[in-house]
Length: 116
Image 1: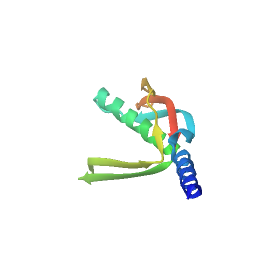
Image 2 (image 1 turned 180 degrees about the horizontal axis):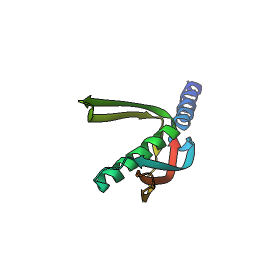
Image 3 (image 1 turned 120 degrees about the vertical axis):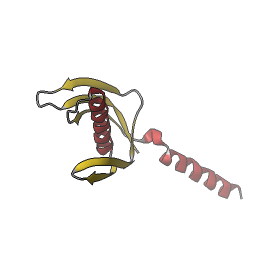
């Protein structure tokens, strides 16, 4: 009877170590986010940051789905759904590069990703 309890405890310990995210691979990343120029600089900055975060998720591995609603050839709504097997760890930094020579707003995201 003691042997079966020992086996169950060993199995649970092994399962914990296998599923524990501390064994996941960490990646250092530096990604450029880009947004098209609009009259609102704050909006351009936010869109560039979102673009950089999406690219980071892609680098970690995952699935991205987007849906755009267009009416009379104008974008009315856009949604992006992501399912990632990675995580952008706290402590990342956004470096604001401003408008580039081609008129796009640019930021650089640097930080660490953890692959699950």
